[in-house]
Length: 446
Picture 1 (cartoon, rainbow, N blue to C red):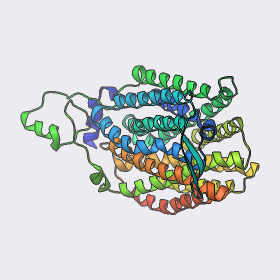
Picture 2: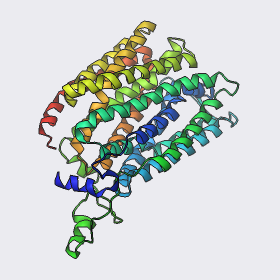
Picture 3: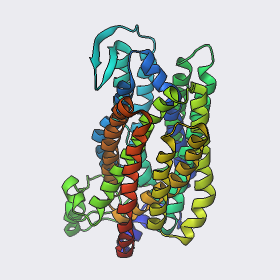
Picture 4: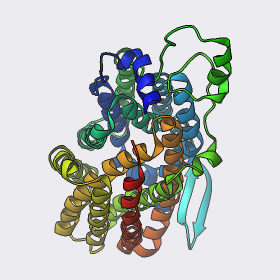
């Protein structure tokens, strides 16, 4: 703890007892989510128009997490060594370039490359624009360490007793993006520019995010040595002592095997995987369900995601700050996972009222569970390895996303609305496993 406080004193951005303002990183998070969510309502329509089906939609959606699985750990480790701001900028630049490529795909001729007719995968045509669209999503994923780096950044600049509430604020900024994105997509999609308008909007939003990082996000990890080091201490700085502050010398960080030997981390990463698996079965299956069962348009899809995100904001801005003072992270994770699993059960009948009721359960479950889970993960990780562990956690989430998004498309092709039962069973399993987290909280010493 003494070394941790020393590192904070050495960091010029954390002097004066102070915390860096949360506003810039929250704004970056909002803009990043806005840029992503603006295409959610029409992506399934676009994939179908370009020759794909439910399986191809799931596969296209999985390109981002598949390549994030490669990029996030690297970016997380770099952020521990070179500073959070530089890596946030690199990530945002990759997002901007990916949207420009995405835009280019919309202007390519729909040339058929090959066709597939399968009893399992369904019937679809792989076209040239689809291939370019896949490439754009892959590039965004490869540079997509912004979430894990932003989480590590938030840990750098907040005290542990405020962390759960501040992760709640981070979730609120994301959900504001999910409100504005689908709503904006609904408005832009009915203009004369059609599919092009939301993608142009994503490009403009990405440019704003890039400029915001350059001019308004201070570095949270860089620091200077208080004075000249004695020769006998140089070996400690160069590799034998991991320091909280950054020098011009590269710092050794734990590799994947070392991380898995840290107390409680493997269990937390396993839960991270299962939670994301349940989410992503839903994220693929629900748009398909909305089209085939509820007969929704792009605008109606946008309204639903806007309502869902609005409810999440209400939970995270009013309910979470109050209950986090009274209940532990583990208790909120347990209760939230129970509510989240129930949400998936309500989606199975395909009834409009139950679908919107499910949104309330989703908001309550996710709004309490996920910020609390991220808070507990950051406490278990400790301050030294935040970037590394957050990056590896993102990789576990990426692996779950790849599996869930592809599985969601396949399950919906075969089971229709019953596919939500799979997501429900996954989250109910998480609910049972979460009871062990109470033991973790008791063992953590700050």
